[in-house]
Length: 104
Image (cartoon, rainbow, N blue to C red; front, side):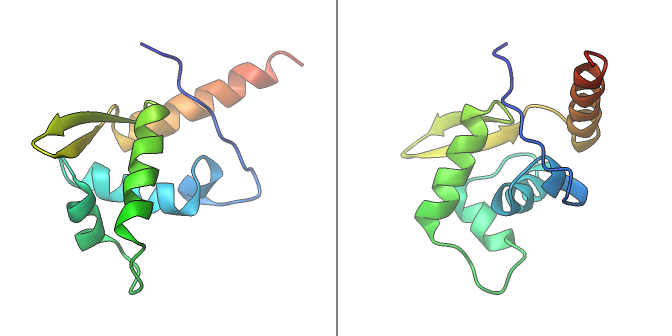
């Protein structure tokens, strides 16, 4: 399995420590539902002002490139599933931080 790209912003709270704002919102949707598409993500997007379809498509694609989501082609669109549960995601990120700190 390819190594996951790592983002860390200790000045934020919650998922924003490890993900950007749009990424965190879309991951919450993905963890809540077994499989999502761009349309599904837009339907469940938590903000009153929804991002553009292409913006959501780009963010989901980038999350797949980072191996946080898996992408499969279904018809003319893609379906996305998570590669790990939210708890696993957080545990793995914390473990990476701890292993980095041990090097000092």
